[in-house]
Length: 158
Image (cartoon, rainbow, N blue to C red):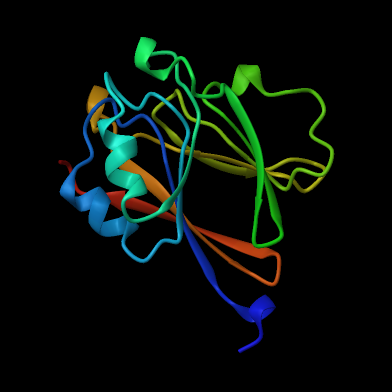
């Protein structure tokens, strides 16, 4: 298999609020990377746990305390030829998104997946914490040959 034919699996989560449930960890198995769109919790424990098995990209959320002061509020990165912009609150997305294929955000605890008029994917994986009686959701993205597919994962009430 040529390197460009390789399938890359990415877990996309947000709003864990200090709780990384076993069902979420199970859903992330086999993911090369995990993207965390903020509101991680009161310590970096969840990030430490995630980076033991995955490459990790994370931004600071509005509920992340002083421990997260060194986390970026926004990130730009590329995985498998797909360019990402990540922020916790959609209202803080930069105006210049030139070259960005996927915008990942969190904050609302509600899953959202939509294409803008220019073909850019806007993705909120929802919340992995199960707060506010929202369903527990995350997204799994597969990338191959710089093309992506997204699958919504909804877990039973945790």
